Image 1 (cartoon, one colour):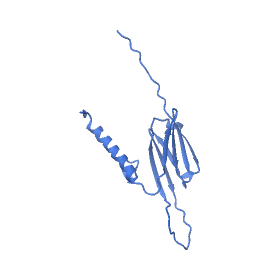
Image 2 (cartoon, helix red, strand yellow):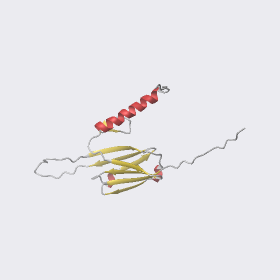
Image 3 (cartoon, helix red, strand yellow):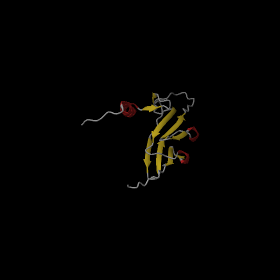
Image 4 (cartoon, one colour):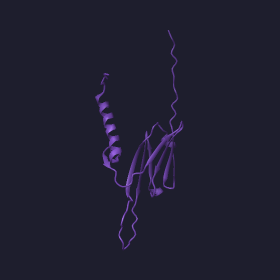
Length: 149
């Protein structure tokens, strides 16, 4: 099947997006707001995005992150979650034998499946789980009646 190639730059953009997706899955590479890429170091919260007819719901597991350390921004079709897990060390004479704890700043950029009303978003934080409820934008169908001649 032959396909007409009308916009080579659009084809390149979709190839880059697909490569980014693959690299995110393989290497846990996170986008930074400047558009550059950086290997995610430290904490990377797991997220879940669901939707119904009226809202988009985002849940993020951020255990150990203080509520006042979280920064949430809803912009266009994305949610940005930033925070920091600070290391709390006690002065002890014994050293750490084994540790899987992760510390440091993190940022997740979560794509949303629909256009949303960012100004009406609501957030709740309980037991290490951040829950966002973001109403969807309602697009009214504007039809134009056309007369037949």
